[in-house]
Image (cartoon, rainbow, N blue to C red; front, side):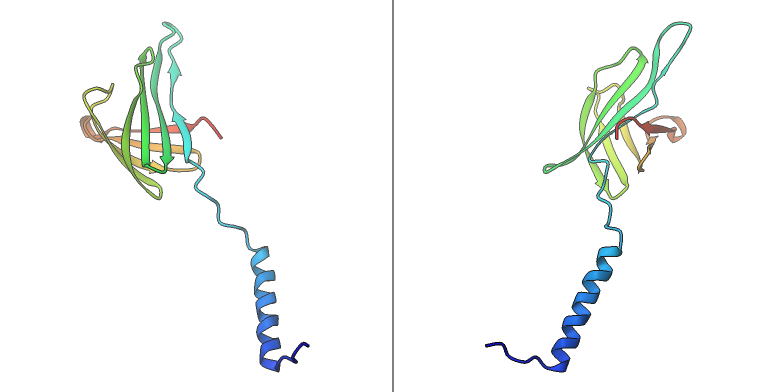
Length: 134
């Protein structure tokens, strides 16, 4: 046998249903879309056919954040994987002497681009890399 609900219970139920209905119209929060995103600014020099630039892949795993950095200096150099500190849209990583670049990088991750500051280079040179995968 169903018990009659009080007016307060009915108001609470209606408010709950109304709040669920209103929340369904609100756009859901977008998940971080750069969990395995690659960014690059590689250019081809027409006269020699050389490739110049950088390719960086941002990798989120259950073991933390990583970055795979590859430099192109005429030809692609060996990529280097390092642990990265990634906080929301900012990152910082340190590359060792085994890599084509030695030193720290930091920057900002955006949906369509990655801004990288090379801290060991003169004047903390910055480059912008465009996202190459979607």
